[in-house]
Image (cartoon, rainbow, N blue to C red; front, side, top):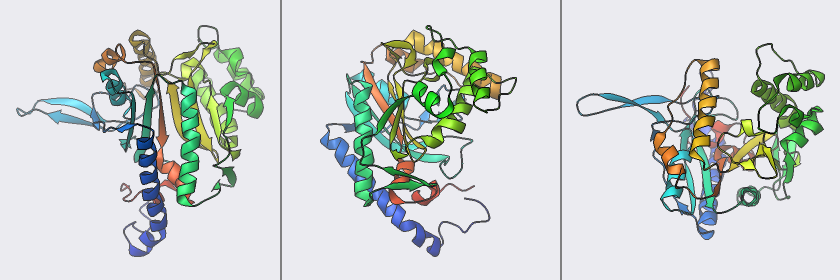
Length: 348
């Protein structure tokens, strides 16, 4: 919390936050009961991992483990339980969920907190469309449990009980920015920076000389697309370009795009889901591309979890989703910032 605001532990501040926190507890119990009724096993992933994830713009908290003799080896607080959960799928689990803390650095604001709760679940043998149905069910369950009929945030209203719209990323670019996204993506997944830059400029978006294709893609998403998603009803934004889905498998009908979707309500991103990639060689190749990009932009790279790649060889076909639990509680409870739905916010 900012140094100029009242401490969260002051009784008057806590009294204002307490209804949101009690709603959080009710939603937590309801979600656990739903997953149990669906035959899922709850799992706990170790927070300390050899790699926090290999996405270019993901920032982790680093630490080190000391042996009895004092020798140090680097470890990271996980940014997601994904690698651990996929190892459990390789071990033979079929339907699992994790509801626990994760950590991401360089993130703080009304919708971001450095330590937050992620709900992650996996279904072996299920198509990723099944997770779209799961997300719709969980939205409605959160609203019902919190006792609300609508989500309202920053002037946008959304009916959590309505069937979410399913909209491709290419469709969203065309609708909200007038940009032909897939004209800049080749059949092999490679991208044409100049083609996308031309479309972005025509849409009134600034493009810097050193912006790559991914930078331009992100700017169009943030400026033109995201603010319009989840209006009236939730949006399932699906079929991301393959270069924007490092952990997802290609879509059979169009290998330019991946089996990836994100769930939005009131312009807020709530969930990110994949039809999971299980090819370790392809996964390694994608990780290397991401880490090269991270090194170019931030001057650092994270190690690759070799144990994770080894487990992929034994992992069944599966689909998985990660949902920002605090954000969903925020929308369902009517809170205005993420710290209002966190029992003990991180100092800062």
